[in-house]
Structures are given as C-alpha cells and as structure tokens.
Image 1 (cartoon, helix red, strand yellow):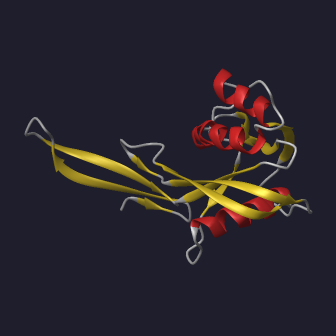
Image 2 (cartoon, helix red, strand yellow; image 1 turned 45 degrees about the horizontal axis):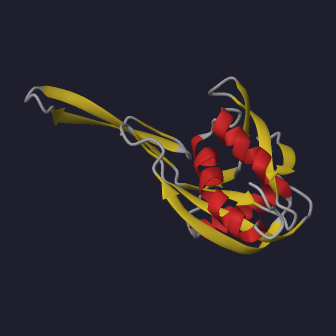
Length: 176
C-alpha cells in the first residue's frame, strides 16, 4: 500500500513481467459504487450536471455514488437517488455491473433503473453542487451516442436501458 483515503487506495507490487524481467505494477482500488437512471411515467429521465475536478469540465451523468460498508448495491442506488435528486423509487431494476477500467484500476459499478418515481426534496452532500436535468429518455440516449455524455457508467447504463425503455413505452411511441 502506497496511498489510501476514504475513496481510493494505491497498491504497488513487485512483479516479474511477461518478458521475465523484474518490474512493478500499481493498482488503484476505488470504492465500489452504484449508478441509477430514474425514468418517470412519461418517459423522462433525471440526470445530474456537475463540475468534475479531474476533467476540469461539467459532466452530465446518471445518479452515482460510492457504496457504504453495510449497504447492498440496490440500497446504495436508492440512497444516492434520494440524496442527489429527492426521488424515491417504487421499483429498482438491476441491469448488471461493469468494470470501467480493467488495466490498472479496480472500480466495479452496479447499474439500476428506478421506476414508479415519487419526487421529493434533494439533500446532496456538502461537497456536491448538482444541477438536475429532466429530459426525455430519447434525448439522453442521443447524448450518450453523440458524446455529450462521456461518463462511462452513464453511457453504458443509458444504452442498456434502451431495451427496457422500449418495453415500457412501446405503446406510447409508434416510431423510435
């Protein structure tokens, strides 16, 4: 272990490389997290826009956050949804997980859809300045494809949600 805080740890190992020579390999372990995409009865989704220090720009994203020690990933998704948007979900549907970085970063992210929404008041962390964007799912889908949304878990979750969206709203949309 060469560094650790509440969100990440960095481990550096002495290794023998595939060419047989001595080397080092470092791995960043990030706190596992969950991402959730809320879809309302009219087919709108709720996203966040927030300045991200690492990329020095605003980023449009699904609701995401780190898992607390005694939570399930579904509980993490529900908590983050309530905190960041004030929304509670009657149903949370799992859509699998991703490992967004596989070479030197361990950062599993579990993805969910939130349905049967009830709007309320947000209570984001003191470190967050979030702008909530309510937009039609099809607009979010376009943003995930045209590069407006670049956050990896957000893109994957929106693309995965398309099939579910089509099932839920097929009766309302004759063309897609």
